[in-house]
Image (cartoon, helix red, strand yellow):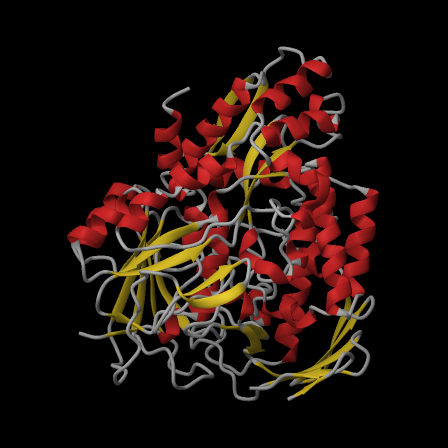
Length: 592
């Protein structure tokens, strides 16, 4: 492997405590969805890594090691669940977590994450998927070679033909088409040209330190065959070259997959089949798991000690939140005279939130510790969540945060004083969020906790829960709302995703925030090839948001939720983002 700065080749007032405790899984519905076992990222075979302020450590204290030894047993059916139907199974038509989670089964990417046992997911390397190599002499012009012999699923009208460069170029056109939910994330890629059947040239607007991470992002370039342009509808059929063939989708029931027999990595998947059940109710999922009908499940913090006591053979893996929970505000084009045009209002919202209380009671930390499990919890920053660790994340309680650390402190008296000083009126403000337990049973309760906190300091809110598929993800998530929102940001595998989504030209810029200082910092870090210099730009971005609170980060995804696996599941590992179906599940096997 050659790896230089300019050339890289890669081969191969309800009771507050009760509400807080109930909100312990807030955000886990999305995290869990990414895991493909009910949910979020993934997990590890021999041990589970923990990210702390000091970086990657060994296994989380008390976490059950997932057995990785022994000879792999092939075959079998792996059963897990998601909480809702995806709005569509076409990844280029919607930004939904469920859409991308489902898409990762069927579609390959050029590069992917390579999760390994004992490796913190954000330290995992980027490796080729259907790419053979990527080379650049200047960091701006990249030649990507494809592996030969990669086969699409043997489904009409594609019928198992070989994947080629035209398919990649076509998929990039779909990613960047007008209205694409994620096209802005690749706006720095100014051209893609198929040089021959197995070679593409990507042209960027300048040197990029994160181009391969972009290609590996399971939000972005899923490779579809050119036949998706009229010969079949990818909203009805998922025909790709990924490890799993979608055999049947029964709306509100399940998605059924079989092993791709000509998958380009002939060694995997180990399993023959995967079935994803759609089970909105947490109690139902728990009952199915305890009956052995599901082989993994994201468990609320209240239930972790109980299930650990009652089912001592269950394997436990902590899943630190890769998502970023936040309170956001509608843009100036929607509410030009809203009180949050004044930074004092936004700072007051932040100081009204008891982050330490959220962490202690929301994650049931003491009871879980008493049960022999432990995972360090950290406060989210914005636009970099705590899951990224010290390489990019600034601890908002540290000296590095600077003076803006004061706005992360729980200080309702100062929050009230700020609101009074600005003469906050008594007009009600709509408070939007995805309801109906879409993000898990704790998220709706978290919304009520935040609602109560803000009411305590004098903000009059109107509760406005929304249906996820019809309203939240299609409107509010895209900044098309009036008022305030409790949002969940996508768990991007690389930090640029957060910058584009929250401050850039992305159509899903939730608050339609455009700040000249932030724009300048984003532009500088995007082309900075020296990592320490780039890190300082990223740290300054976190200090800037901390001072202005364009988005107010909250805590659920700053701590760990817990994924339970049945004793027979082996090969469990954790990735980051939405690629678990291709990066984790092919390596699962059942010791039965």
